[in-house]
Amino acid sequence: MSEKPTAVRVYLARVRTALADLPASEIEEILEDVRPHLAELEAELGEGARVEALIERLGTPESYAAELRASGGYPPAAEGATQVLATAKAPSLAKPRIAFWGLVLSAVALALFAFAAAVRIDPDGLIGAVLFLPVFLVSLILLLRGGVEAVLALPEVVWLRQALAKGRRQEDSGKALNYLSSLKPAWWIVCAVVLVAFGLLLMLRSRSAVLLLPFLLVAGGAAVWAGPRLRGDRRLLWVAVPISAFVIGGILGGFGAAVDLISHRNSYSSSPSYYPSSSDRYGNEQLTYGGNEVENVYAFDAEGKPLTEVYLYDEEGRPLTVTRYGCERSSGTKEKIGADNRFPRPKVEQGVTDDQGNYNGYNGYRSACREDAGVPFSAAIPKVTAPSPSASATPTPSSTPTPAATTPASPTATPTR
Image (tube, rainbow, N blue to C red; front, side, top):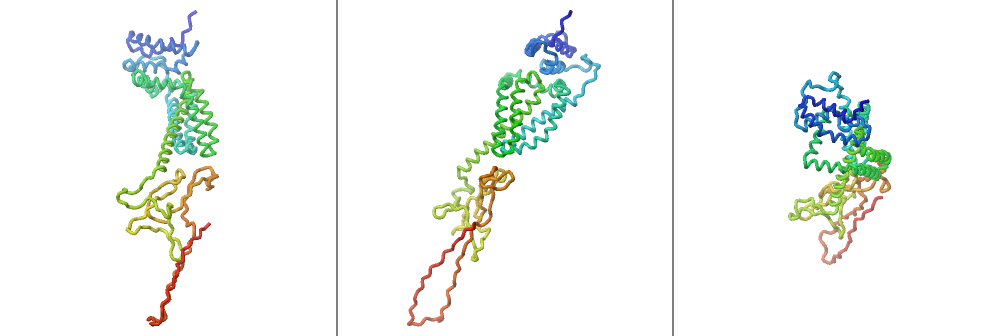
C-alpha cells in the first residue's frame, strides 16, 4: 500500500509544475532551498496538516512560485506554459477583490474616525464609521464564502507580500520588520488597553459613551484572542486589521489632543502681547483703577442710557487697549481673541450644559461658554443745574458778595439683578 503524500509534497508538486518552463536543474535548486522552510511550517501546523493550511499561510502554490521567480531574478512564466488544470476556467477575481478592498477601506475609515473622536474627545466623532459597516460586512461575507486563498492569490496581494519579503531580505529594513514582528504579542495587549481607556475617556465627556463601551470591550477581547492565531488562520485578518487601525488612529488623535492641551496651558500661563512692540508704547495690555485690573468699561449719556461702540484714548491720543476675550465655539471655552480699545464688550461666562444643550452652570455635563452683551447695572446720572442770572447786571458798591460753596453730586450706579 503506497504511502499517502504529505501536504508539503503536494504543495511542492504544484510549485514544480508552475516552474516547469525553467531548466530542470534550476527547479531542483529552488525546491531544495524552500523544502526545509515548508517542512518546518508543516511541523508547526501539526501532524496531518492539509494543503489548505499551507495555502492559507503562503498563498497558492502558483503565487508562491511567482514569488520565487521574482526573488531569484527569473523571468515571469511564459504565456502558454504548462499549468495545473490548464483547461479549467480561471476563477473570477471580482469577489475576492471586493473582500480585500472592503477590508482596506473599512480599516482606513476606522482609523480616521478614531483620530477625530480622540482629538475632540467626543464620541460623536465615531458616528460616521457606521456608514462603512455595510462595506465591512459585505467584505466579510465574501471572504467566508470564497475562502482566503482567492484573496491571497490576488495580484495586488502577491505584490504586497513580495515587497514585504524583499524588505526582510534587506539588512536595515529586515531588522526593523523583524523587530516589529517580535512585538506582536505585546501589541494585542496594547490594543485591548487602549480600547478600554478610550471608552472610559469618552464617558467623562458624554454619558452617551456608555453605549459605546461594551463594543470597545468586545473589540479588546477579540484583539487578544485573534492576534496570536493570525499565523494559523489568515481569515482573522478581518478582525485584527480593523481593530489595529482603530487603535492606531486613536493613539495618534490622543497625542494630538495632548499637544493641543499643553499648548493652551502654556498660552494661559504666559502673557502674550498683541501689539507691534514694547518700544513704541502704543497701547496698554491692561487697565487698572485703584490697584485693580479693569476688563470692561461702560459709558452712559446724560439721560442714563448706555452707549455702545465707544473708543477710549488717553491725553496723547493713544488707544487704551485691553485684551479682549470671547467664546471658542468648538471647545466651548473662554479664549483670548485679540485686543482693542472698543467698549463695552460682552461679558464672557464659562459654564457647562446638559445633554439637551441647556446652559446649566456647573451642574451639567459638557463644557460651554456664552457671551452676555447686556449692561449689568443701571446708572443714575446727576442733573447739572445752570446758575441763575443775577437780578442786577452791575453790583452796588455797598453790597458784599457772599460765596456759596456747593458740593457736586456723585453719580451712582444701581446693579440690575
